[in-house]
Image 1 (cartoon, protein in one colour):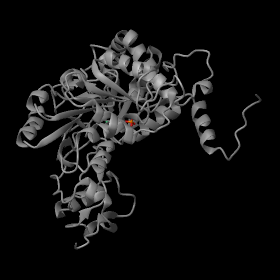
Image 2 (cartoon, rainbow, N blue to C red):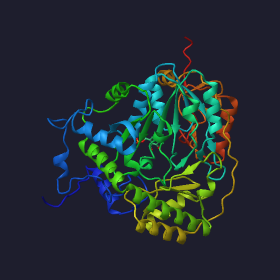
Image 3 (cartoon, helix red, strand yellow):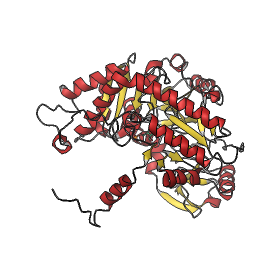
Image 4 (cartoon, rainbow, N blue to C red):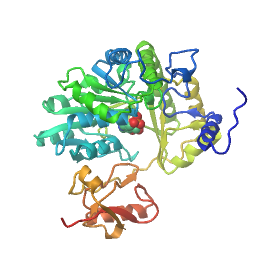
Length: 477
Ligand SMILES: Cc1ncc(COP(=O)(O)O)c(C=O)c1O
């Protein structure tokens, strides 16, 4: 084969190659970090020769009885699940399938307001009715880092018809809340855990406990985020003690997953879990040690970093050492750009006030050292200031997410929205917690809050430049 020439009509390829050529140090997903721990255990084989489909002897993801069944069963035994189901469309597909397996039209789901959009999609698919509650917003970081267990348990006991609870644990920022009382508080309901960011939890005792060990019925893990699986590789687990019918899960996955699953993704899943089962304990405890030391040293040099002293405050019961959250008041965007352009370090996520770094199966001491040197050179900037963080009370819900999705929409000026039903999700970022979602009614207070916040320069997801927003048209029917 000759030299690869990239013509201008391959913009995607050209963009990918140009990005890869920068050779940034990746503090973001996927967890294999540029292939350093990519768990594709077929050395010497051309990848393309293994990009296969459901052929004789290769089993069928939708009705596994051969090599896929065996591989899923191995994964389940490594993490302590009753059964595991491979996902080739990320944790997104697993969350949607979990909710579809459990909920039908009108069923009540207790959910924190800051769930991933896959939960909202699942409510559209199922017709379930959400009962929302607000997470705790950390006054310094301005982010939803914790949840008060009593608040959740009070909600559960006030809702005798509750069908299921969705648990977001860990958060994107690596914080966990204390869900240990939930199983007892909800003896007849289903606990579904979005553990998209915690696929490494079952493999090392220095990490927070997985929801699998805390009585959850269904647990969704994004193995591509922190373990060594290819992007989109994720797993849906059935909890060991759960009485849920596995056929309902299989049926939901049959509706949602492709009929052409990637064998490369599936093989990377078994490779990632096998590697984590063999060496994860050592890898993650070393990484936890190094990450803890880095956090302490940065703290001593004036950086505000989320750390062990934050445990026990604002609903935070534990921290995942694979996440490093720096508070960078008003400097987040500039610092993330400087880190990338001057030091070749790419963060996972940033906003005006915070930067998040993600460690994974492929991280080593060298990368962390470079991060530390860069941050020490850049300096911590201004000390954090506590900002007034408040969200208006949750609005009245007039339609379910499914009804709202199918209802006709129109655009109006935000100032004229009071009394109208919202047709989109509007969330200030940070904290990224929606103030209003489709099917809820704008109060005057919410309209004023959004206008005030926009005037303060806050970035709003769902509002692009003009002040028009989508509402649901009243049909008068
Ligand atoms: C909390 C949470 N849940 C679920 C998902 C969906 O994961 P995936 O990208 O694997 O579909 C994400 C994605 O970032 C997430 O942050």
